[in-house]
Image (cartoon, rainbow, N blue to C red; front, side, top):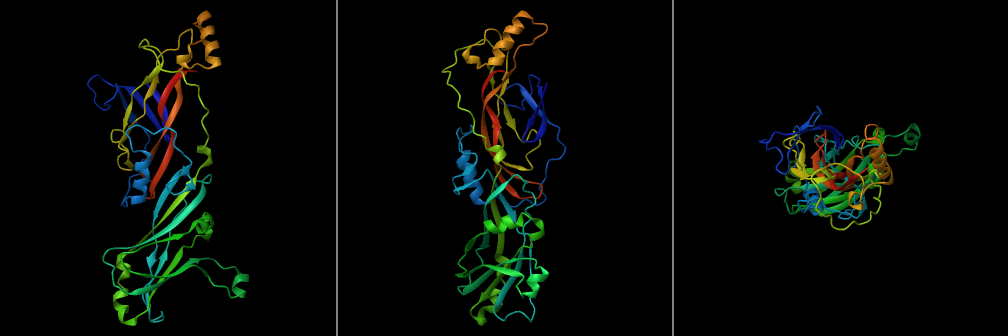
Length: 354
């Protein structure tokens, strides 16, 4: 029986009965005892860009080695965590005081408080999607503002409470528009400054005004961010190759196969992909003399000698992981945001004596 920490959760590994079929690879079952698994209330669909990046990272069944854990080459920015935030804002009701050619006015709002303090934001991108029923053939003008709090000095200077971020003309041809909000998102890390965005869309022809007000039915928006947690970006030390391992006795320290099925441990409600992965585990003895194939440290070599002369007082070194591999996971967080995160040290490649 072993207690282990997996992705921040405490997990119990226990030997399984011979007829247990929880693990298809080995004779172990796994029981989750963490009580606070997030269960999405209304999970949003996974954006195609996250599926694309995930599939590139985890295209094979086995975890890929030598991945750039701290650089998103697909987006060409540093980072190891991608989040997609749904819009929590609302449309402003129409009123006679509004400009006659105003199609819609919407407050766009995102909650970024799930980001940890250590994370460095390297990318923020707003996506505005006009669904397939939104074709009207007309030309529209878009204005995007950042809302901000004014100080008394700003008010005396008659400064505006909104800052223009983008202005462009477009046609509703099942269009998707993207806006770089990296600097805005960095400001929003201070929650007191996160008042959201103001989106306004105008028509150039008043005879299409009745139709264009229906745009809000087909408009959806989301924010994709990339952050870098430098604490997870330590480069592994290069290890000397030991060549092909010869056949050894069954009780010698070595890697054994352990497949973790997320459905079995109760994570299927919030883990989107993968459904499981080959994690492996280390098991076996570290007897004297420690050879190169057992990858023993200098301390382990001396400990085996001490154990040889005083077995009752000094135990053998332990069989532990000495080389790990990362995996990528798609999941929902506690706020129903879709997250793609690369986790280091999730699968065991090699075992040794320490």
